[in-house]
View (cartoon, rainbow, N blue to C red):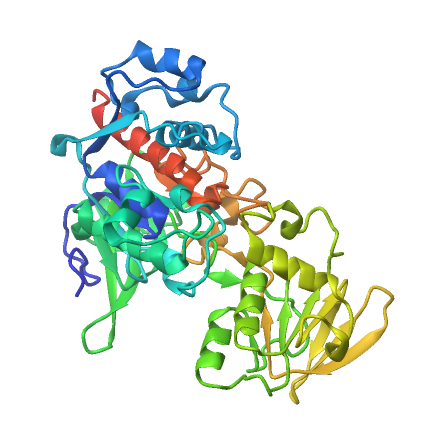
Length: 484
C-alpha cells in the first residue's frame, strides 16, 4: 500500500492539511513551496522593472509568500493573463521575453517550521502528463522556461551534460529533470504515485467516523466541513485497493490531457482509430504500420498532429493529413511560430501547403487535405471525407489518429466540475472555460477550500503555472498565520 494511504474505514484519524491531485509541474512546484522552501528577494538584487523594484524595496526582509501579490503584480504585462503568473515569472526570469540574461532576483531559504504537511497524488511517477509524451519530441517552449524554482533547467543540463536544440529540449529530458527535481529537493515523501482519485466530496467534520452524513460539497459550509478524497491504487499483486483520506484543503492540478477530444462521428470507436500519439509509436514499434502499408490518417492541425506527422515521416510511413482550417489561417499555430526557433514545425507547415497527390508531391508519402473533415469511419478501414465544396472522398488507411485537442477529466467532481467553471453551463476547458478562481489565491470562487492550478485555471505553459502554485502557497501560509 502506498505510504500515507488508508483503506476505506470507519476508524477516525487526523486529516492532513492539504491534498494535491496531480503531480505534474504545478503539483511539484506547489509541493516545493509547501515544504518550507521560502522565497526572499536577494540582498542587492535589482529588477529591470523600476516600478516592481521600488515595490520590492518596501519589504526587503519579508518572504514573497507573505507579501501582497495583488499589489506587487499591478501593472505587469506579458504572455499570460494571470497577474500572479506574470509576477512570479518576472522574478524568476527577469526580462526573458526580451532575450535578457538577468539572473533571478529571488533567493530560497529552507524554513522547516513554515512547512505545511501535504500529499501529492498522481497516477504516474512525478512529471504528470510528461510521462505520456514520446521522449524524443522537442518541446514548444524554450528549455529554460521549463525550469522550476531554485534549480534552473539550464543548471540541470550542465549537471547531466545535455545539449539544447534551438534553446529547446526533448520531452524525455524534461521528464527526467522533474523527477530529479523531486529527489534533489527532498520532496519524495510527499508524492504518492500509482493512485487514481475517483471522488472529492465534503463531509461534516464530526462525521469522520461514518459516511452517513456525506453530502455533495457544494451543499456544505466551510466552517464545519472537510474534504474526503476517495480513490484506488494497485497493490504489489496487481489487485485494486480502495483508499480514502481527509484533507482540510484540496488543490486540483490534473491538467487537461486526460480526456482526448473526439469528432463524434460514425465509426470513431473502431479499433483502428486512436486519439493519442502513443498509438502511432506502438504501431511503428510492432510494425503494424510501415513504409509499404496504407497511409496513416492524421486528423488535426495542432502541434500534437504535427508531432505525429514528423514521427511518421521519420520512419517513411505514408500519411494523409486532414484538417478543417485554411493553411494560411492566422489562427493556425504554425502561422504564429518563428521559423528560426521552430524549423521542424515550419517544415510541417510547408508540407501542409502541398495539396497534390502522393506521386506528384515534393514530400514523398504525404498528402495534405486542408478544409476537409472526416464524416465517417468504416470497418474495412475506409474513411469518408467532405471538402469545403461538400464533395465526398474515400481513402483506405492503416490506422487513424484523431488529434484535435483534449479536455480535463474532472469526473471525480460533481457534474464534472462544470459548476465551478467560469460558465457553469458549458464543459470545463482550459482555453475557453477554465475553472473560476480568485486570481491572487487560485481558490475556486464557488467552493471555499478547493483550489485549482495549471491549465484548469487558464495557465497553459510551465513557466506560468508556477505563479498559480505561488498564489496557493501564499494563501495557505497566510491562513495558517492568521490569528484565531
